[in-house]
Length: 112
Image (tube, rainbow, N blue to C red; front, side, top):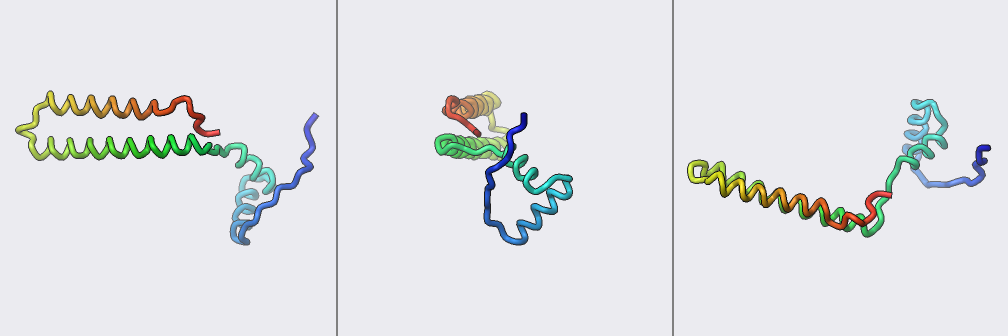
């Protein structure tokens, strides 16, 4: 037996937001209530700890990308002097760094 919806949720929106939501609901062929329930069911939120882990992961990836760009610039500038072994060693180092960043706090709850 279906549970009856008896609780009303209120949100303050601008008239333009309200109109946009009603238009989206009409385009989907559902009521605004159904549209909002479906949208909220698909929404994931972050815990504070997961957010900080993701922020640190993004910073680390940016640093690794910066180092990779510097290596590529150096290799392009000094193509004749670039030793393939040295460049490959650096690329392997970047790969290891990326794998380590991917494992940062794997046990932390990501999106909820």
